[in-house]
Length: 150
Image 1 (cartoon, helix red, strand yellow):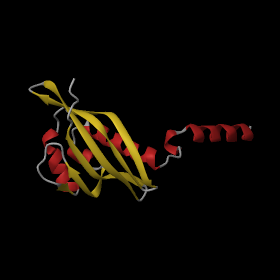
Image 2 (cartoon, one colour):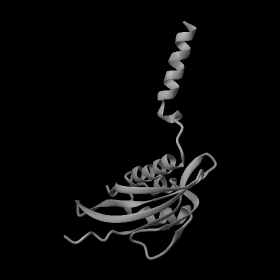
Image 3 (cartoon, one colour):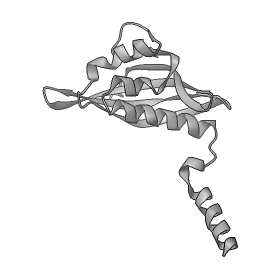
Image 4 (cartoon, helix red, strand yellow):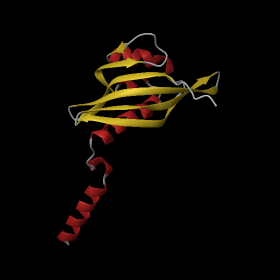
């Protein structure tokens, strides 16, 4: 009986996503996915928690560099309660080392304007780093995407 319980415990450990051993590539991509999910909450403080405390943000619609948690909260304040969403469509990830990776790709912001969804194709690059045991965004650049001509 004890042996069966031991086997069951080991099987549960191996199948548990929270205990899966991930590398920097997977961890960095998970951090970017957390950012996208946080953006969908439309809560600036939730979004800011996906960034490192000293992060630098070059926002899609900002003429300035937003540096640090309070500046990032200020940047995202206009979307509070807006219903805006973000969908990551394509990305590439380059592992720098065990504590850093660069993720770049395309995403679309869907902004609600007069109650109607308006897509905003954009491109991004993020430097994602491990601080302590947590992965966070250290640098994020986002800009409108130039779409291919047909």
